[in-house]
View 1 (cartoon, rainbow, N blue to C red):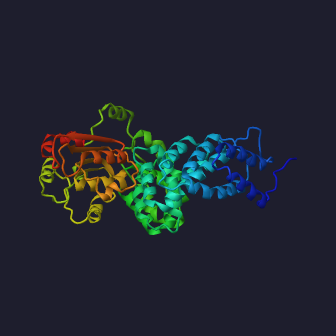
View 2 (cartoon, rainbow, N blue to C red):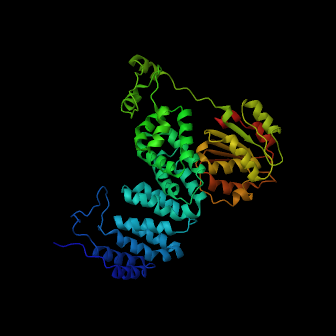
View 3 (tube, rainbow, N blue to C red):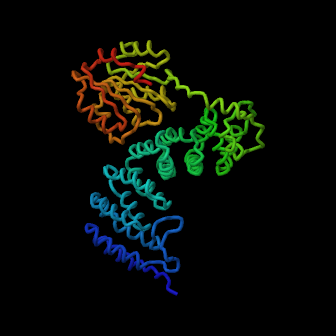
Length: 473
C-alpha cells in the first residue's frame, strides 16, 4: 500500500523557501506549488474524485504542516509587496483547490489594512464559498491585520456586514467578530455590544448557531456586560422571535448564564392571539417548563386579517433629531420650524469641540434604532460621523450643507454605508464648498441623493421650498 511520505521538516523548509523564490513569477509559483502539494499527498485518504469532505472543492489532502510552512516562507514577501500578493492571491483562488484557497486567504491577511483591494475580494469570495474551512479563514485569517492594527476600520466593516438590509451577510459579520472578542488584549467591548444587540434582538432562527457562539464568546470576555445586555434585550423587545430563538440556544450557554436568564425565558400565560404561521415555531421551541395554552386565531379571522390593506407605518417624531451648526443653537430658525412641523422631534443644544459635541450626542441617541438624523453644516458633520460609526441605528440621514471637508470627517478611512442619505447643498455656498463635499459623500454613502439648489450656505430659500413630510417619509 502507498502511504503518505513522512515529513522531513528540514527538507520541507527548503522546498517552501524555494517556492517563495517564485513569488514574483506567478506561473512558475503555481507550477512548483502543485508539485510540492502533490509530493505530500496523503494516499491513504485520497479518493478518486479528490473532493474535500463536506465541500465542493478539490483537495490534495496535504497535511496542514505543509501549508503552514509555505505560509511562513511567504509572509515577509507578502507584507513587503502587497500588489504582487494580491495578484498571486487571485491566481491561487482561481485554482479552486482547498489548499490554494486557504493560501489565498492567508495572503489577504498579511496585506496592509489600507489595501483598497482587500475588502472587495473578501466580500465576493465569502459569497462564493461553501467550504467552512475556507470561509472561516476568510473571516478570521484574512482580517487579522485589520482586526489588530485598525480595530475601528474593522468594526466599520462588521457594521456593514450586520446592516439591517443585508441579512445575507449577518452570518459573516458574527463569525468575523469571534476572534476579536476572544482576543484578551482587546478590552473595548461596548462598541461590539452596540453592533450585535440589534441582531440578537432580531434573532433569526437560521443564525441560532452563530448567535449561540457569539453570546458564549461575549460572556467569557465580559460576564457582567453580556448579562446586562441580554437582560436589556429580553426585557424590552417586542419581537417574539427573540425569546423563541434564545430558548432554543440557551442550553449551550454556561450554567450561570442560563440561571441569570431563566426567569426572562420562562413561558408566560397569555390570552393574546398568535399568528398561525408562528404556531409551529412555538411548539418546537426549547422550553424551560411546560408551555401554557396559547389562543389561536380562527381561519375566518386569519382570512379577514389578510384581506385588510397593510397600514402605512406612521413616522415616530421622537426618533427625529436635528443637529444645529457650529455657531447656532436649538433656538435657531431651522430648529424652531422643525419643532413646529414635527411635534416631539428632538432639537438639542451642543457646545464645544467636535469630540465634545459627539460625547453630548451619544447619550441622546443611546442604542435606540430607526433614527432620522437631520444635520446642518457642523451638525451635518456630526450626523455623518455618527452614521458611519452606527449605521444600524440610523433609518435616514439628511444633511444640509454638511461640513464634511473638515478634518474629523475628511481624514477618516471611509468604509461606505448604505443608509439612505439626502444632501441639500447650495451653488452659492461660500462657507462649505459644494464639489469637494459631493466627492467625499460619494465615497461615504452608497445610497446617496444629492440635491443641488440655487441658494447660499444657510439654505433659507430652499428650506421653505422643501416638502419635509415627503423627504422624511
